[in-house]
Image (cartoon, rainbow, N blue to C red; front, side):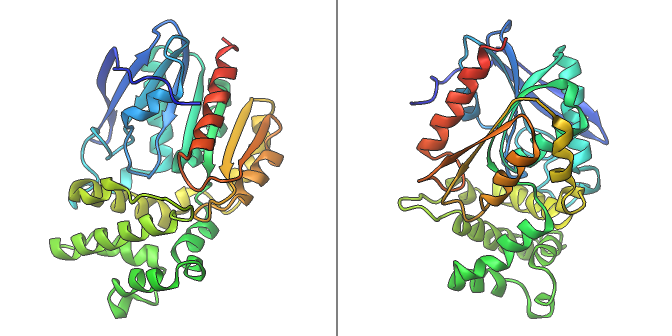
Length: 318
């Protein structure tokens, strides 16, 4: 099953969400269709046009937005002068609510992948009455355990690559958690230090997701602007465990009750192991888990097919 054809938005805008931040948004598909909103990954990846293609444009009103500091939203989180203290999960949830109200949406289907799956869960738990259904893939919760797995324990899978990742941190900082060390390097006054840290961080990002034969490196990391923005936001959110206590999002899933959800996860996803999706499916009464046996972290063919099957099914809910 291939994704829907490319489409262009029929409405775009920039929303002032406070704290000096302006969030870029767009709407495509059918103006009278079922509302759906996408929480993109990263943090910091931005909402790329490909997200529109997970929805039947004849049946969905598709809302995309760039989270604070990413994509076309301003100020750019890649700038060392940008204040990241007003870029937290709580801020992103509030931004999504402000956008929902701005667009006159009562309830919407939420979609997210990787970091977007964490944000989707957080939004749903904060505003369950605004969520009609959820489709989440490459499911994560951004807990300290998950962050330590990706930045530390993953050495067991990629030892040589991890040693290069660690070696990019100056020796006096190597006793720190690597995510903390990188966050500090990415805030350094020396542009050269920041650039080297961003390059090393993104090289590791491109490594720990490469667990399936045929994986192609992410070309976005070749762009120094994207690379810096992405690295600064990922380390910022990861070092704070998305501002949730360990196990808080998992425990909160019970309150989502019978909100229908499809959780889609690749069996070969070592970057974000399947136990999170498995446990969430048990904790969320309305959720079902779809395991894609030959997929890793991200939009593999079987994952895409499962996402499309879910959005097509939910489109019938009106």
